[in-house]
Image (cartoon, rainbow, N blue to C red; front, side, top):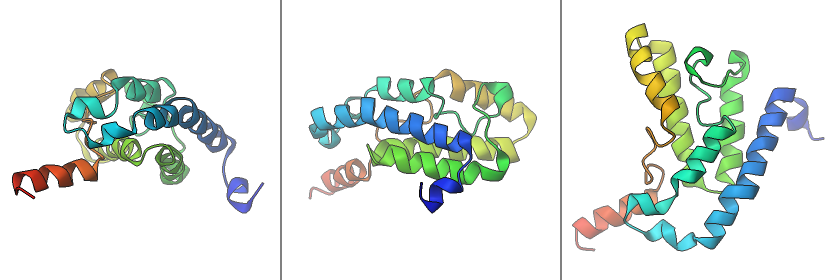
Length: 155
């Protein structure tokens, strides 16, 4: 066990192990088999919704959402470290997917910490209900955005 592992809580180790299994079992096989999809302009064809649904099943998609709205509770003292740990593990399989999840976490944390209660009651249920909500298929793909800009400019 290295120094980094010793500083992790048991919960963080379990979450990392779940994410590692998710990447090994779902993300990496899909990316290896469908690597050409990165270049598709159709956002719905880039990454299947099933990947986000699986991320939802293991509880990593709604990490920043308060438990009362159906999110996964995190120790507030280690929340940022946990986000970073999980994001790094997901990025090992697909950086675009990691970016999508990070965007959901950031919006959730902002809603939780800054938004008035009525906005939390409006948005958190939507985030929890729909695995694709706030995560359009090209949200994390810089390559796709670059190609779109280039195409508009006739590169």
